[in-house]
Image (cartoon, rainbow, N blue to C red; front, side, top):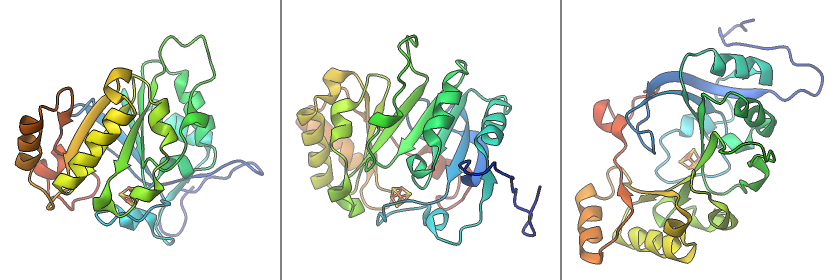
Amino acid sequence: MNNKDGKLECVPEYGEPVFKVVEQFLSINGEGRRAGQLALFVRFAGCNLDCEYCDTRWANERDASYDAYTCDLLYEMITGAGINNITLTGGEPLLQPGIGILLDHLRTERRLNIEVETNGSIDIEPFFTKREDFISDNVTFTLDYKTRASGMESRMCMHNYELVRDIDTVKFVVGSVGDIETAVDVIKKYRLKEKGCCIFISPCFGKIEPREIVEYMVKNRINDVNVQLQLHKYIWDPDRRGV
Ligand code: SF4
């Protein structure tokens, strides 16, 4: 059913959570473990942070236009897309009421690789699977550690860095050499390499040159960390949505 703006409206059962989806699109993964691969992106409305470099602020505005999905409808949309890589992003996807239920449904679709891009301020432990019969979880978390460049570093939930698994990813978006040093400290303190999680350092677009990160890594012999550029910002206009 469409409302007057042409946006999708669902009719939830009483008390049923409704997911606010501001956009969904197919593209390549611009970053992360599956960078370069096709993925379905589902972007949810709303965020609890306000990063200085946020490029999706429009999705966090109170009056952002969204499609309302019930859990069943969203599950059908995701599983019916014919795409194996699914990126749930935002905003902050873990703020959506019912997201844990959706993740548990999606865990039953073993062909899917579900990547939850979270801003690092929300405890991820409640969203881990409780099922012991899963040899490997197909729901993984990409934790964005917000360095000083974001202005949100004090909001990080450091418990998450104790919990990360070898299937999860930690990404540091850095805007200065000081931010790289913070990243290195967190990697060491929480033994992220030893835990086997994937570690990325990405330049904050326009604030630091990728070359400076590489030079720092060479000088300081930083092994087992990946420099990653946000591919989509190089392929398309950096401000373009839906890519
Ligand atoms: S966490 Fe992400 S969506 Fe939220 S303000 Fe920061 S950059 Fe924007």
